[in-house]
Length: 163
Image (cartoon, rainbow, N blue to C red; front, side, top):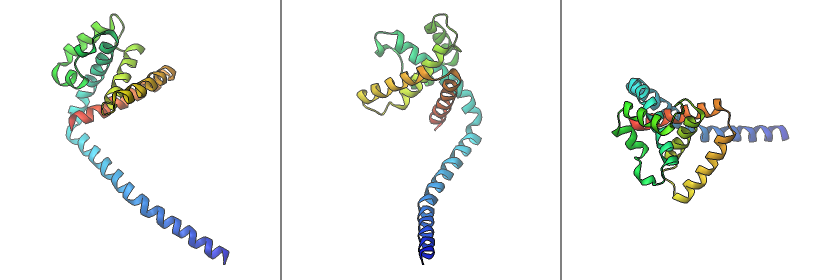
């Protein structure tokens, strides 16, 4: 009798988990299909946009760090949509003042800006709190992990700008 009751409970748990997970899997499948469609339709544009977004992120954060009056700099979106890639690159080189765009400093600038944009919907206090955590985390991560995070973040940003 106990075995039969246990079997019924296991079947009920399995059925409930199936009911809960099926819509979740369907939503994930739709998102995956949408992303695949976007890549197929806009793949070339996406690939061309990725380095522009990366440089814009680095430039934005560099300018924020070095300028006392933050209102003077353009938003990340404005940097991406209003400046051509050569102007972005020139301004980044100037802002980095001799450091390479492939340096740890530039990578850290890019990561900070990428997260800053992700937090744009938050209140100023929440944004500052989360950015403090980001800054602390960046300081502890090895370069390879920071590079992976930046690559993923920039890829997601580029998809967002294509939508």
